[in-house]
Amino acid sequence: MTPATVGTVADMNVSTTADAATTTDADTLVAMLGQSGTGRTERGQLTVTREEARNMVTVGAGDLATCDRQALHGIVAAVVARLDELGAEHVCWTVPQGIDPTLATSAIVEGTLLATYRCTAYKSADDEASSLSALTVAGTDAAAAAARAVVVTQAVNRARDLQNGPPNVITPTYLGQRAQAIAAAHADLSCEVGGAERLAELGMGAFAAVTQGSDSPPALIVLRYEPAAAAGGPLLALVGKGVTFDSGGLSIKPASGMVTMKADMSGAAAVLEATAAIAELGLPIRLLTVIGSAENMISGGALKVGDVVTAASGTTIEIDNTDAEGRLVLADCLHHAVELGADRIIDLATLTGAMKVALGSEYCGYFATDDAVSDGIEQAAAAAGESVWRMPLDRRYADYMKGTIADLTNAAIGKGGGACSAAGFLQRFTGEKPWAHFDLSTAYDAGLPWAKKGGSGTMVRTLVALAEQAA
Image (cartoon, rainbow, N blue to C red; front, top):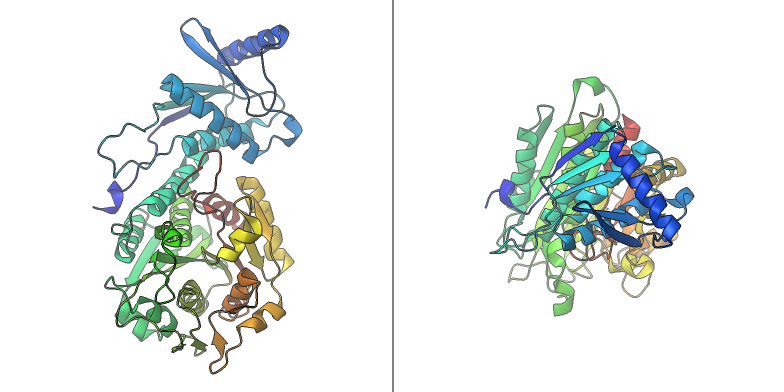
Protein backbone atom coordinates (compact mmCIF):
# COMPACT_ATOMS: atom_id res chain seq x y z
CA MET A 1 0.00 0.00 0.00
CA THR A 2 1.51 3.37 -1.03
CA PRO A 3 1.39 6.51 1.10
CA ALA A 4 -1.17 8.11 -1.20
CA THR A 5 -3.79 5.41 -0.57
CA VAL A 6 -3.94 5.32 3.23
CA GLY A 7 -6.97 6.83 4.96
CA THR A 8 -9.63 9.16 3.66
CA VAL A 9 -9.28 12.92 3.68
CA ALA A 10 -12.55 14.59 2.80
CA ASP A 11 -12.48 15.55 -0.88
CA MET A 12 -15.06 18.27 -0.57
CA ASN A 13 -15.90 21.12 -2.91
CA VAL A 14 -15.46 24.26 -0.78
CA SER A 15 -16.52 27.73 -1.87
CA THR A 16 -17.58 31.10 -0.53
CA THR A 17 -20.02 33.62 -1.92
CA ALA A 18 -20.80 37.23 -1.06
CA ASP A 19 -24.35 36.75 -2.36
CA ALA A 20 -26.60 37.84 0.50
CA ALA A 21 -29.70 35.95 -0.69
CA THR A 22 -29.04 32.88 1.37
CA THR A 23 -28.05 35.02 4.34
CA THR A 24 -31.35 36.88 4.09
CA ASP A 25 -33.28 33.59 4.00
CA ALA A 26 -31.42 32.41 7.07
CA ASP A 27 -31.96 35.69 8.93
CA THR A 28 -35.68 35.49 8.19
CA LEU A 29 -35.79 31.91 9.46
CA VAL A 30 -33.90 32.79 12.64
CA ALA A 31 -36.24 35.72 13.30
CA MET A 32 -39.27 33.47 12.74
CA LEU A 33 -37.94 30.83 15.10
CA GLY A 34 -37.18 33.46 17.71
CA GLN A 35 -40.70 34.87 17.52
CA SER A 36 -42.26 31.42 17.80
CA GLY A 37 -40.08 30.43 20.73
CA THR A 38 -38.96 27.25 18.98
CA GLY A 39 -35.42 28.39 18.18
CA ARG A 40 -32.70 27.40 20.64
CA THR A 41 -29.86 29.76 21.41
CA GLU A 42 -27.80 27.59 23.77
CA ARG A 43 -24.42 26.80 22.26
CA GLY A 44 -24.60 23.67 20.09
CA GLN A 45 -28.37 23.22 20.40
CA LEU A 46 -30.06 22.46 17.06
CA THR A 47 -33.38 23.34 15.48
CA VAL A 48 -34.37 21.62 12.20
CA THR A 49 -37.13 22.92 9.96
CA ARG A 50 -38.11 22.10 6.39
CA GLU A 51 -38.91 24.75 3.83
CA GLU A 52 -39.48 24.21 0.09
CA ALA A 53 -37.75 20.82 0.04
CA ARG A 54 -34.78 22.22 1.95
CA ASN A 55 -33.69 21.23 5.40
CA MET A 56 -32.90 24.37 7.37
CA VAL A 57 -30.76 23.77 10.43
CA THR A 58 -30.08 26.51 12.94
CA VAL A 59 -27.67 26.09 15.82
CA GLY A 60 -27.29 28.13 18.96
CA ALA A 61 -23.99 30.02 19.24
CA GLY A 62 -24.48 31.18 22.82
CA ASP A 63 -22.62 34.31 23.89
CA LEU A 64 -20.99 35.64 20.73
CA ALA A 65 -18.31 37.37 22.80
CA THR A 66 -16.94 33.93 23.75
CA CYS A 67 -17.63 32.24 20.42
CA ASP A 68 -14.03 31.73 19.37
CA ARG A 69 -12.54 29.33 16.81
CA GLN A 70 -12.62 26.36 19.18
CA ALA A 71 -16.26 26.98 20.07
CA LEU A 72 -17.16 27.28 16.38
CA HIS A 73 -15.49 23.93 15.68
CA GLY A 74 -17.76 22.32 18.29
CA ILE A 75 -20.85 24.03 16.94
CA VAL A 76 -20.07 22.92 13.40
CA ALA A 77 -19.44 19.34 14.53
CA ALA A 78 -22.92 19.21 16.10
CA VAL A 79 -24.50 20.40 12.85
CA VAL A 80 -22.49 17.99 10.69
CA ALA A 81 -23.62 15.04 12.81
CA ARG A 82 -27.26 16.05 12.23
CA LEU A 83 -26.70 16.64 8.51
CA ASP A 84 -25.24 13.14 8.18
CA GLU A 85 -28.42 11.77 9.76
CA LEU A 86 -30.43 13.73 7.21
CA GLY A 87 -28.28 12.45 4.34
CA ALA A 88 -27.35 15.97 3.24
CA GLU A 89 -24.89 16.26 0.36
CA HIS A 90 -24.44 20.05 0.21
CA VAL A 91 -24.30 22.38 3.20
CA CYS A 92 -24.52 26.13 2.84
CA TRP A 93 -23.46 27.99 5.97
CA THR A 94 -24.23 31.62 6.68
CA VAL A 95 -21.92 33.67 8.85
CA PRO A 96 -23.76 34.96 11.92
CA GLN A 97 -23.73 38.68 12.57
CA GLY A 98 -21.51 39.68 15.45
CA ILE A 99 -18.64 37.36 14.52
CA ASP A 100 -15.69 38.37 12.36
CA PRO A 101 -16.51 36.92 8.92
CA THR A 102 -12.92 35.84 8.18
CA LEU A 103 -12.67 33.98 11.50
CA ALA A 104 -16.12 32.46 11.05
CA THR A 105 -15.44 31.36 7.47
CA SER A 106 -12.16 29.64 8.26
CA ALA A 107 -13.54 28.03 11.44
CA ILE A 108 -16.63 26.75 9.61
CA VAL A 109 -14.52 25.23 6.82
CA GLU A 110 -12.12 23.68 9.35
CA GLY A 111 -14.93 22.37 11.53
CA THR A 112 -16.79 20.82 8.59
CA LEU A 113 -13.72 19.08 7.18
CA LEU A 114 -12.66 17.87 10.63
CA ALA A 115 -16.12 16.53 11.44
CA THR A 116 -16.60 14.75 8.11
CA TYR A 117 -13.27 12.91 8.39
CA ARG A 118 -13.49 9.12 8.42
CA CYS A 119 -10.71 6.53 8.21
CA THR A 120 -12.30 3.90 5.99
CA ALA A 121 -9.35 2.67 3.92
CA TYR A 122 -9.27 -0.62 5.80
CA LYS A 123 -13.02 -1.31 5.66
CA SER A 124 -14.55 -3.54 3.00
CA ALA A 125 -17.60 -1.28 2.77
CA ASP A 126 -17.50 2.51 2.92
CA ASP A 127 -20.82 2.73 4.78
CA GLU A 128 -19.60 5.16 7.44
CA ALA A 129 -18.49 7.93 5.10
CA SER A 130 -20.11 11.32 5.46
CA SER A 131 -22.70 12.15 2.80
CA LEU A 132 -21.48 15.75 2.53
CA SER A 133 -19.59 16.53 -0.67
CA ALA A 134 -20.00 20.30 -1.07
CA LEU A 135 -19.64 23.21 1.33
CA THR A 136 -20.49 26.85 0.72
CA VAL A 137 -20.09 29.75 3.13
CA ALA A 138 -22.51 32.48 2.06
CA GLY A 139 -22.54 36.19 2.74
CA THR A 140 -18.76 36.53 2.83
CA ASP A 141 -15.91 37.17 0.43
CA ALA A 142 -13.31 35.51 2.67
CA ALA A 143 -12.19 33.11 -0.06
CA ALA A 144 -8.52 33.33 0.95
CA ALA A 145 -9.37 32.35 4.53
CA ALA A 146 -11.39 29.41 3.25
CA ALA A 147 -8.57 28.25 0.97
CA ARG A 148 -6.04 28.39 3.82
CA ALA A 149 -8.45 26.48 6.06
CA VAL A 150 -8.73 23.71 3.46
CA VAL A 151 -4.94 23.32 3.22
CA VAL A 152 -4.40 23.25 6.97
CA THR A 153 -7.35 20.99 7.78
CA GLN A 154 -6.43 18.50 5.10
CA ALA A 155 -3.00 18.34 6.76
CA VAL A 156 -4.68 17.64 10.11
CA ASN A 157 -6.72 14.85 8.53
CA ARG A 158 -3.66 13.35 6.86
CA ALA A 159 -1.98 13.27 10.26
CA ARG A 160 -5.08 11.46 11.55
CA ASP A 161 -4.72 8.94 8.73
CA LEU A 162 -1.20 8.20 9.93
CA GLN A 163 -2.29 7.92 13.56
CA ASN A 164 -5.23 5.68 12.76
CA GLY A 165 -3.45 3.40 10.29
CA PRO A 166 -2.45 -0.09 11.47
CA PRO A 167 1.15 -0.55 12.63
CA ASN A 168 1.79 -3.30 10.07
CA VAL A 169 1.24 -0.59 7.41
CA ILE A 170 2.42 2.59 9.13
CA THR A 171 6.01 1.49 9.76
CA PRO A 172 9.18 3.60 10.00
CA THR A 173 9.82 2.77 6.35
CA TYR A 174 6.34 3.99 5.47
CA LEU A 175 6.86 7.31 7.27
CA GLY A 176 10.08 7.76 5.33
CA GLN A 177 8.21 7.13 2.08
CA ARG A 178 5.53 9.63 3.07
CA ALA A 179 8.19 12.26 3.77
CA GLN A 180 9.79 11.63 0.39
CA ALA A 181 6.40 11.97 -1.31
CA ILE A 182 5.82 15.33 0.41
CA ALA A 183 9.24 16.58 -0.69
CA ALA A 184 8.66 15.43 -4.26
CA ALA A 185 5.50 17.55 -4.40
CA HIS A 186 7.22 20.82 -3.40
CA ALA A 187 10.22 22.35 -5.14
CA ASP A 188 11.47 24.08 -1.99
CA LEU A 189 11.46 20.86 0.07
CA SER A 190 14.21 18.26 0.22
CA CYS A 191 14.25 14.99 2.12
CA GLU A 192 16.85 12.53 3.41
CA VAL A 193 15.95 9.20 5.00
CA GLY A 194 18.60 7.12 6.76
CA GLY A 195 18.49 3.70 8.39
CA ALA A 196 20.58 1.82 10.94
CA GLU A 197 23.85 2.57 9.13
CA ARG A 198 23.11 6.30 9.23
CA LEU A 199 22.40 6.14 12.96
CA ALA A 200 25.75 4.42 13.45
CA GLU A 201 27.56 7.06 11.34
CA LEU A 202 26.07 9.82 13.50
CA GLY A 203 26.77 8.04 16.77
CA MET A 204 23.09 7.90 17.65
CA GLY A 205 23.44 5.13 20.21
CA ALA A 206 20.33 6.13 22.17
CA PHE A 207 18.04 6.06 19.10
CA ALA A 208 19.65 2.88 17.77
CA ALA A 209 19.18 1.08 21.11
CA VAL A 210 15.40 1.45 20.86
CA THR A 211 15.35 -0.32 17.50
CA GLN A 212 17.36 -3.38 18.63
CA GLY A 213 14.36 -5.59 19.36
CA SER A 214 12.53 -5.02 16.07
CA ASP A 215 12.87 -6.61 12.64
CA SER A 216 11.59 -3.34 11.14
CA PRO A 217 14.46 -0.97 10.28
CA PRO A 218 14.50 2.52 11.81
CA ALA A 219 14.18 5.73 9.83
CA LEU A 220 15.91 9.02 10.53
CA ILE A 221 13.91 11.49 8.43
CA VAL A 222 15.20 14.99 7.70
CA LEU A 223 13.16 17.49 5.68
CA ARG A 224 14.49 20.92 4.74
CA TYR A 225 12.23 23.72 3.51
CA GLU A 226 14.31 26.55 2.03
CA PRO A 227 12.24 28.99 -0.07
CA ALA A 228 14.18 31.78 -1.72
CA ALA A 229 12.05 34.39 0.06
CA ALA A 230 13.40 33.22 3.43
CA ALA A 231 17.10 33.12 2.50
CA GLY A 232 19.30 34.03 5.45
CA GLY A 233 16.46 33.92 7.95
CA PRO A 234 16.45 31.99 11.26
CA LEU A 235 15.98 28.23 11.07
CA LEU A 236 12.99 26.78 12.91
CA ALA A 237 13.26 23.07 13.71
CA LEU A 238 10.32 20.73 14.26
CA VAL A 239 11.26 17.40 15.86
CA GLY A 240 8.81 14.49 16.10
CA LYS A 241 8.78 11.18 17.92
CA GLY A 242 7.83 8.46 15.43
CA VAL A 243 7.56 5.21 17.40
CA THR A 244 5.12 3.38 15.14
CA PHE A 245 4.42 0.71 17.74
CA ASP A 246 5.45 0.66 21.38
CA SER A 247 5.22 -2.66 23.19
CA GLY A 248 7.17 -1.21 26.10
CA GLY A 249 10.08 -3.50 25.28
CA LEU A 250 11.19 -5.79 28.10
CA SER A 251 9.40 -3.41 30.52
CA ILE A 252 6.30 -4.63 28.70
CA LYS A 253 3.04 -2.72 28.80
CA PRO A 254 -0.16 -4.41 30.02
CA ALA A 255 -2.41 -5.59 27.18
CA SER A 256 -4.84 -2.72 27.73
CA GLY A 257 -1.99 -0.24 27.51
CA MET A 258 -0.91 -1.46 24.08
CA VAL A 259 -4.24 -0.88 22.34
CA THR A 260 -3.41 2.68 21.30
CA MET A 261 0.35 2.25 20.89
CA LYS A 262 0.13 2.41 17.11
CA ALA A 263 -0.38 6.14 17.75
CA ASP A 264 2.94 6.57 19.55
CA MET A 265 4.09 8.25 16.34
CA SER A 266 1.60 11.13 16.72
CA GLY A 267 4.39 13.68 17.14
CA ALA A 268 5.93 12.55 13.87
CA ALA A 269 2.55 12.67 12.14
CA ALA A 270 2.00 16.25 13.33
CA VAL A 271 5.38 17.67 12.29
CA LEU A 272 5.35 15.79 8.98
CA GLU A 273 1.95 17.02 7.82
CA ALA A 274 2.46 20.50 9.27
CA THR A 275 5.60 20.69 7.12
CA ALA A 276 3.54 19.72 4.08
CA ALA A 277 0.98 22.45 4.85
CA ILE A 278 3.69 25.09 5.41
CA ALA A 279 5.20 24.24 2.03
CA GLU A 280 1.82 24.23 0.29
CA LEU A 281 1.00 27.65 1.75
CA GLY A 282 4.41 28.88 0.55
CA LEU A 283 5.29 30.51 3.88
CA PRO A 284 8.59 32.45 3.68
CA ILE A 285 10.43 30.72 6.53
CA ARG A 286 13.38 28.33 6.80
CA LEU A 287 12.24 25.04 8.30
CA LEU A 288 14.06 21.89 9.39
CA THR A 289 11.98 18.83 10.29
CA VAL A 290 13.64 15.87 12.03
CA ILE A 291 11.76 12.64 12.76
CA GLY A 292 13.11 9.61 14.57
CA SER A 293 11.01 6.57 13.71
CA ALA A 294 11.31 3.08 15.16
CA GLU A 295 9.40 0.20 16.69
CA ASN A 296 9.95 -0.65 20.36
CA MET A 297 9.69 -4.43 20.36
CA ILE A 298 10.89 -7.50 22.24
CA SER A 299 13.45 -10.07 21.05
CA GLY A 300 16.71 -11.64 22.12
CA GLY A 301 18.54 -8.53 20.98
CA ALA A 302 16.21 -6.00 22.63
CA LEU A 303 17.41 -3.23 24.92
CA LYS A 304 17.67 -4.44 28.53
CA VAL A 305 17.09 -2.76 31.87
CA GLY A 306 20.54 -1.92 33.20
CA ASP A 307 22.14 -1.28 29.79
CA VAL A 308 24.10 1.92 29.26
CA VAL A 309 23.89 3.63 25.87
CA THR A 310 25.75 6.63 24.47
CA ALA A 311 23.83 9.40 22.72
CA ALA A 312 25.20 11.33 19.74
CA SER A 313 26.11 14.21 22.08
CA GLY A 314 28.41 11.86 24.02
CA THR A 315 26.05 11.71 27.01
CA THR A 316 25.76 8.27 28.59
CA ILE A 317 22.30 7.03 29.61
CA GLU A 318 21.46 4.23 32.02
CA ILE A 319 18.32 2.28 31.07
CA ASP A 320 16.01 1.86 34.05
CA ASN A 321 12.85 1.34 31.99
CA THR A 322 12.72 0.20 28.35
CA ASP A 323 9.25 1.77 28.07
CA ALA A 324 10.85 5.21 28.44
CA GLU A 325 12.10 4.88 24.88
CA GLY A 326 10.73 8.02 23.24
CA ARG A 327 13.14 10.27 25.09
CA LEU A 328 16.05 8.16 23.83
CA VAL A 329 14.94 8.68 20.23
CA LEU A 330 14.31 12.39 20.79
CA ALA A 331 17.64 12.92 22.55
CA ASP A 332 19.53 12.06 19.37
CA CYS A 333 17.07 13.85 17.09
CA LEU A 334 17.20 17.06 19.13
CA HIS A 335 21.00 16.97 19.09
CA HIS A 336 20.90 16.39 15.33
CA ALA A 337 18.68 19.45 14.85
CA VAL A 338 21.22 21.53 16.80
CA GLU A 339 24.07 20.14 14.70
CA LEU A 340 22.17 21.06 11.53
CA GLY A 341 21.97 24.70 12.63
CA ALA A 342 18.54 25.07 14.23
CA ASP A 343 18.01 28.48 15.85
CA ARG A 344 14.77 27.49 17.59
CA ILE A 345 13.40 24.00 18.28
CA ILE A 346 9.93 22.62 18.94
CA ASP A 347 9.48 18.92 19.59
CA LEU A 348 6.27 16.91 19.77
CA ALA A 349 5.86 13.49 21.34
CA THR A 350 3.40 11.20 23.06
CA LEU A 351 5.99 10.97 25.78
CA THR A 352 4.37 10.29 29.16
CA GLY A 353 1.16 9.00 30.65
CA ALA A 354 1.80 11.51 33.44
CA MET A 355 0.69 14.40 31.22
CA LYS A 356 -2.62 12.66 30.53
CA VAL A 357 -3.09 12.19 34.27
CA ALA A 358 -2.33 15.88 34.90
CA LEU A 359 -4.40 17.46 32.13
CA GLY A 360 -6.65 14.76 30.69
CA SER A 361 -7.53 15.49 27.08
CA GLU A 362 -8.72 19.04 27.66
CA TYR A 363 -5.31 20.69 27.26
CA CYS A 364 -2.07 19.75 25.56
CA GLY A 365 0.75 20.31 28.01
CA TYR A 366 3.99 21.93 26.90
CA PHE A 367 7.27 23.17 28.35
CA ALA A 368 9.20 26.22 27.17
CA THR A 369 12.64 27.61 27.93
CA ASP A 370 11.47 31.22 28.22
CA ASP A 371 8.47 33.52 28.16
CA ALA A 372 9.08 34.64 24.57
CA VAL A 373 8.80 31.06 23.33
CA SER A 374 5.75 30.49 25.51
CA ASP A 375 4.02 33.70 24.39
CA GLY A 376 4.39 32.68 20.76
CA ILE A 377 2.94 29.26 21.45
CA GLU A 378 -0.01 30.68 23.40
CA GLN A 379 -0.83 33.12 20.60
CA ALA A 380 -0.53 30.47 17.89
CA ALA A 381 -2.64 27.94 19.79
CA ALA A 382 -5.35 30.53 20.43
CA ALA A 383 -5.40 31.47 16.76
CA ALA A 384 -5.59 27.78 15.82
CA GLY A 385 -8.34 26.92 18.30
CA GLU A 386 -6.26 24.43 20.30
CA SER A 387 -5.94 24.41 24.10
CA VAL A 388 -2.43 24.35 25.58
CA TRP A 389 -1.07 24.64 29.11
CA ARG A 390 2.47 25.57 30.11
CA MET A 391 4.14 23.21 32.59
CA PRO A 392 7.17 23.97 34.79
CA LEU A 393 10.61 23.45 33.29
CA ASP A 394 12.58 23.42 36.54
CA ARG A 395 16.12 22.30 37.24
CA ARG A 396 14.86 20.34 40.23
CA TYR A 397 12.96 18.00 37.91
CA ALA A 398 15.98 17.67 35.64
CA ASP A 399 17.99 16.55 38.66
CA TYR A 400 15.65 13.55 38.97
CA MET A 401 17.32 12.23 35.82
CA LYS A 402 20.88 12.02 37.14
CA GLY A 403 22.26 8.53 36.61
CA THR A 404 23.84 6.19 39.13
CA ILE A 405 26.54 4.72 36.88
CA ALA A 406 25.98 6.92 33.80
CA ASP A 407 25.42 10.62 33.18
CA LEU A 408 21.65 10.21 33.07
CA THR A 409 18.96 7.65 33.75
CA ASN A 410 16.09 7.37 31.29
CA ALA A 411 13.42 6.99 34.02
CA ALA A 412 13.03 8.74 37.37
CA ILE A 413 11.34 5.73 38.97
CA GLY A 414 9.27 6.46 42.06
CA LYS A 415 9.89 10.21 42.09
CA GLY A 416 6.65 11.47 40.48
CA GLY A 417 6.55 14.46 38.14
CA GLY A 418 7.04 12.15 35.18
CA ALA A 419 6.21 14.67 32.46
CA CYS A 420 8.38 17.35 34.07
CA SER A 421 11.40 15.10 34.61
CA ALA A 422 11.11 13.82 31.02
CA ALA A 423 11.21 17.41 29.78
CA GLY A 424 14.26 18.04 31.95
CA PHE A 425 15.94 15.02 30.34
CA LEU A 426 15.23 16.31 26.81
CA GLN A 427 16.50 19.80 27.55
CA ARG A 428 20.00 18.35 28.03
CA PHE A 429 20.12 17.73 24.25
CA THR A 430 18.86 21.10 22.95
CA GLY A 431 22.16 22.98 22.95
CA GLU A 432 20.63 25.78 25.05
CA LYS A 433 18.59 26.87 22.04
CA PRO A 434 15.14 28.42 22.55
CA TRP A 435 13.02 25.29 22.82
CA ALA A 436 9.54 23.98 23.51
CA HIS A 437 8.40 20.43 24.13
CA PHE A 438 4.80 19.27 23.62
CA ASP A 439 3.77 16.13 25.53
CA LEU A 440 0.74 15.18 23.45
CA SER A 441 -2.01 14.29 25.90
CA THR A 442 -4.62 15.26 23.27
CA ALA A 443 -3.32 13.05 20.47
CA TYR A 444 -5.64 10.04 20.57
CA ASP A 445 -9.16 9.27 21.87
CA ALA A 446 -9.33 12.90 22.95
CA GLY A 447 -13.14 13.08 23.11
CA LEU A 448 -13.26 16.22 20.96
CA PRO A 449 -16.60 17.09 19.32
CA TRP A 450 -15.09 16.25 15.93
CA ALA A 451 -12.68 13.50 17.08
CA LYS A 452 -14.20 11.53 19.93
CA LYS A 453 -12.19 8.40 19.06
CA GLY A 454 -8.97 7.78 17.20
CA GLY A 455 -6.36 10.29 16.10
CA SER A 456 -6.99 14.02 16.45
CA GLY A 457 -4.09 15.43 14.42
CA THR A 458 -3.33 17.57 17.44
CA MET A 459 -1.04 20.59 17.12
CA VAL A 460 -0.81 20.60 13.31
CA ARG A 461 -2.83 23.81 13.23
CA THR A 462 -0.75 25.37 16.00
CA LEU A 463 2.51 24.52 14.23
CA VAL A 464 1.28 26.16 11.03
CA ALA A 465 0.20 29.25 13.02
CA LEU A 466 3.67 29.37 14.62
CA ALA A 467 5.25 29.25 11.16
CA GLU A 468 2.98 32.09 10.04
CA GLN A 469 4.17 34.13 13.06
CA ALA A 470 7.76 33.61 11.97
CA ALA A 471 7.09 34.45 8.33
